[in-house]
Length: 121
Image (cartoon, rainbow, N blue to C red; front, side, top):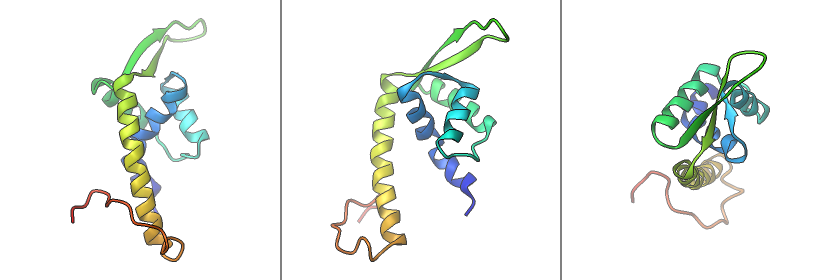
C-alpha cells in the first residue's frame, strides 16, 4: 500500500497532534513525525501543512533567535487548532473503527456498529 497517499489525508491532524504537547519549528516537527512512525513524511509536505494551518487560524507562530544559524520560526497550536484536533480525532476514531471492521470482520462481528463515517443512510 502506498502510504504517501494515506499521509496526505492525515497530515493536518498529525501535525496538530505533534504540536499539542510542545511547540516546534519546521524540521523539528518533521523529525517528531518520523520518530512517531511516519517515516515517509516529506519535508515539503510538512512545511506546506504548517503554512496552511497557520493561514487557517489553527496555529500561531513566533521567531526564536539562534546563535549558531538562522532564526527559527516556531509554531504553536492555539484554541482553534485544539478544536480542529478534537474534531479530527473523533472523525479518525470512527474511520479507524470502520476500517477495522472491514479488514477484520470476525473480530468486530459482535461489536455494536457506530455511526457511518462520511455516509448517509
